[in-house]
Image (cartoon, one colour):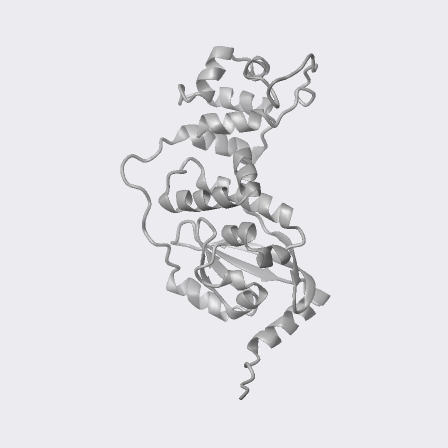
Length: 273
């Protein structure tokens, strides 16, 4: 994992960004290994050992020097340190089911806004009726990654689909850290890598970003385009599980559209015949 991360990030930094003159034809994208080593103040042989996984105990000073050359932000630097600070687990892997606590489920049912509980790999573990009205993909058993990359109807809901997919993959990288051998994760990556060129490209970039609240644009077939604020809240006593709530600005047209959607979702289906 350390070597793959360093290679991916090295290939994203141009010589111009690193302050180097671009001379001649370059056979590889980004910086060469020896250029990273020179700029970081370490030997080329030592950097090669890092990329090949032969040195698992670099100092914090070395990591920060390499991070500076590779233009890593705080999220990427924290991820880099996590890759060398903890050895992968020996033996068995995480296999326990992700089960939301009863208190979180009660809170979810009480919310008037679209809300759902997601697992570590963006599986939908619970959702309220307004969340399902907002997107059928938010029904229990769905997976946000799979739907965003493989389902045209879900993609059509997101005018900013390119940004949304990039953000979600970066969030996944941050959540996973060095623990990339979890069976559920391997299953998901295998499925999406085989079916989506965009997923493969984004996963190979090793982008890392912590999950933060922010606006989300949705183009809903019933009420049109609306912008909702998205909050992800950690659930106490349930590692990796988050309560996600979508809420509009008070008094906005988005709030009116969400109220219209809630009204339509609560209306009983007409019976004919």
